[in-house]
Amino acid sequence: MKKIVILGSTGSIGTQTLDVVRQNLDLFEVVALTCAGREDAMLRQADEFGVPLKNCYTCNGSYDENVLKLIEAATLDCDLVVNGLMGMVGLEPTYHALKSGHDVALANKETLVAGGSVIMELIREKGLKLLPIDSEHSAIFQCLEGNKGRKIKKILLTCSGGPFRGLKRQDMAEVTAKEALKHPKWNMGPKITIDSATLMNKGLEVIEAKWLFGTEPEKIKVLIHPQSIVHSGVEFMDNSILCQMGVPDMRIPISLALGYPDRLDNPDDELDLFTTGSDLTFTEPDTETFKCLGLAYHAISEGGSCPVVMNAANEVLVDMFLKDRVGFLEFQDKLCELVYAHDTIADLSLEDIIMIDRETREKLTYKA
Ligand SMILES: NC(=O)c1ccc[n+]([C@@H]2O[C@H](COP(=O)([O-])OP(=O)(O)OC[C@H]3O[C@@H](n4cnc5c(N)ncnc54)[C@H](OP(=O)(O)O)[C@@H]3O)[C@@H](O)[C@H]2O)c1
Image 1: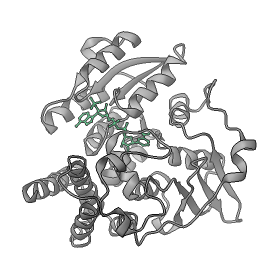
Image 2: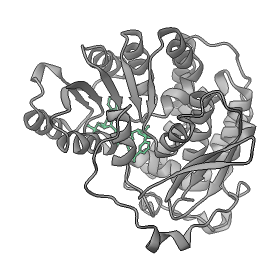
Image 3: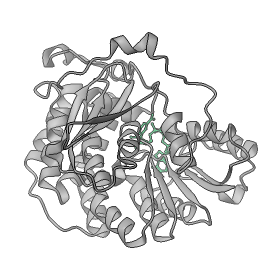
């Protein structure tokens, strides 16, 4: 039995992780759960999966109190920590899970966007596994299996294009949070859904891919692929391209991360290429309209504090947009202004990253 801790068990990734566990009760034992506000839902999960109540953490206090509880959960005795938390709050629990010698299945992309250098150094030092749950990174991870050491020409990172694909800037002036929350392909938590509407999600994924696979950002190419069947791929030096395909269901990459190195049975979700295969398209992203994608390339080429600031400011501004306190274009413009004006600080420790994240949030909250 693999013992797993699930951070953020009540969210979209957390509940789908438990769906995978439910179908494989002979393989996994859930030893701890965490939530923020949805305590009742977490307690129902604890009852169903037999998780001791002392290992169920409700993180609805201050940032620091929440982080302490998450670290406690992430360092309990287990074989794998699944990080399905939303936002920067996921960084420290990932760090401490690794410090305790645990492999981590990571959905929380903000961990690598803000703390990629620190986390990857720890992975190398400890020889642990960081298994990607994000469907694109899971696809790339699978394409690279069996190709260790082979030269990569490009990473091909696919993107559905979000709910506003094909629109121009002027078409999005009146966009509401309700409209931006309607993703055409994936049913996800609110923050990542807004990130998908601005293409910031793809920008965060470029940064995540840089850290996970050690690939320079210039070699990471984004392709708009509205069908979300090809989940990403790798082009090698001989011009061979390997891609991974499947129906758009997060339970597939989650099951790969949970079962790794094995593949688990999946009774649902078969991809029928006869019905979908003739309809696969790939186009260039419109970075003039969707400025956040270019912003993320800028942030990672700057490195150091720049992605930390971008990530923190994006979290604050997305939250304000969800609360109707700032317009859709206005918040992206503010974000670009702030990040392009930032004076980058290099070589950050974990403590520096946390401090820069906090300062950025304070500045924005004060101005707001
Ligand atoms: N959803 C997807 O399909 C998907 C796909 C790829 C990558 N990801 C990434 O996976 C991560 C999670 O996304 P999601 O869509 O699952 O998010 P979500 O549905 O909003 O769930 C977030 C989880 O974290 C908890 N949480 C939120 N804020 C917290 C805080 N300050 N302290 C402690 N716990 C907190 C939530 O608790 P409550 O439920 O109690 O609020 C919930 O359990 C994100 O980084 C996202 O980018 C998601």
